[in-house]
Image (tube, rainbow, N blue to C red; front, side, top):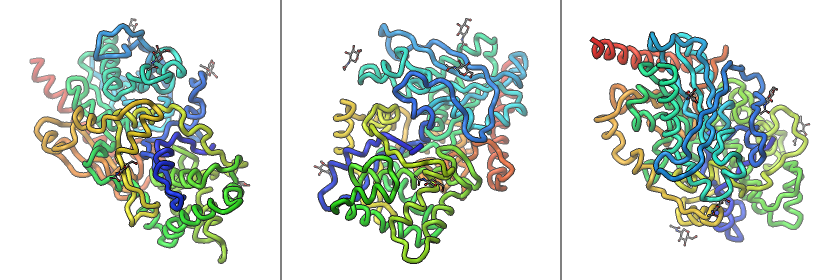
Length: 512
Ligand SMILES: *[C@@H]1O[C@H](CO)[C@@H](O)[C@H](O)[C@H]1NC(C)=O
Ligand SMILES: *[C@@H]1O[C@H](CO)[C@@H](O)[C@H](O)[C@H]1NC(C)=O
Ligand SMILES: *[C@@H]1O[C@H](CO)[C@@H](O)[C@H](O)[C@H]1NC(C)=O
Ligand SMILES: *[C@@H]1O[C@H](CO)[C@@H](O)[C@H](O)[C@H]1NC(C)=O
Ligand SMILES: *[C@@H]1O[C@H](CO)[C@@H](O)[C@H](O)[C@H]1NC(C)=O
């Protein structure tokens, strides 16, 4: 299915577009790991429960449980409780007497079963650590809906008010604490895991709740993609470089395509022509919609530029950007730019060859959890530079805010995340008070530009791979894993082992 997303940008796009700049893409704030296709398709309906599994994804065994949480951990308001879903596996756990570790994945913006299926690393290493595995779901996603249903939870800004990272971290902390108490497992060390926004949560949780977790593996966590901590162009620059490194002519074809799309869109019957060329089911309403659709594909191709075939965001071949560029470059001489682009982007949208026609998101302004988060706390500035393959676009917070006011009746707080979790002077602060965090990143991943790419201290370390994409290290191992990936995972295992050894050593000392 087409990757439909509510774009924060559409209105920014409309607002910015002057008559003669029709191709300027809307540039939504790029999203973190995309919500699962299945969950997304179901958003707005009540049957979001049964994850149907993605092609070839390993199925892991777990029990599904529910836990009653306060909607607001930070006030004593009289709100109903909600049921938080969590997945648990204790098969390999060495138990409370041996203080068996607890591996805890910080659920991010989607159905937790989807993240569990795509986080093979945790499942694969748990037996050797004799660890329990827990995958709690993030509130307001999947089945973990306050007020009983998606419709109620997403009704308006009052009901959505408690969709925040702080509340999610408090959910996790309350859940772990009570779970441990129920199992008499108070002495069991907790290790946090997370990818993307989940990685941000894992690292923040380690910093905010050091008494609850002994360490965190934060994979592809762009915790510095706020305010002016990194240049706003970093995301699209990395996407562009991922294409340029495969083929300069491919990069140039894409770069040239925006103007062609724009001028085509202005012609009489131009939109019909574009609709036919790109085989949309319904007639395009604007050339900008097509640009957005392409922009999404390029961004997700860069995030999922894995060396082997995978079905993370969409089913794709190994090295998918190489394949896109091969198709764009290898069209017969005389093939027009639009046809080339269509051939290329089909690698993303139609790799299985089963799509009859492409659907654009029907309701780009529909309520969506991540857009809500982006309009409140998660204000991650984004822009393009002249050297990128995208149309020129500069970040304008005023427009961003206007979009949020119009669509969610909410005003973002762009400086809140750095106030709450740190950002400015981050390295110095962490060096002096933090410990035991791994920031892992692959440099092909456009989000790596907003993450921590250098060691902060002896125990807050950056593991960076040149050829890695979005949290590839968390994915299940495969026979095709390159050496650098095997080594990266070994390094992570060693660090985690070190945290545990350290914990047990201290514990013995205290117990004496
Ligand atoms: C999920 O699938 C199982 C087995 O197919 C079924 O028994 C169960 O009722 C389904 N649950 C929901 C909530 O649809
Ligand atoms: C949101 O919906 C709830 C429940 O229907 C209602 O009580 C509340 O007043 C609404 N808030 C706003 C801001 O519309
Ligand atoms: C702990 O046990 C109580 C009583 O059986 C139960 O209601 C609660 O859900 C349990 N907590 C967790 C986190 O499983
Ligand atoms: C998807 O791929 C199949 C097989 O190549 C092709 O027959 C079909 O027309 C494609 N769909 C679209 C919408 O391009
Ligand atoms: C941002 O957009 C607003 C309204 O669209 C405009 O008035 C303002 O000049 C822009 N700011 C910059 C720095 O371009």
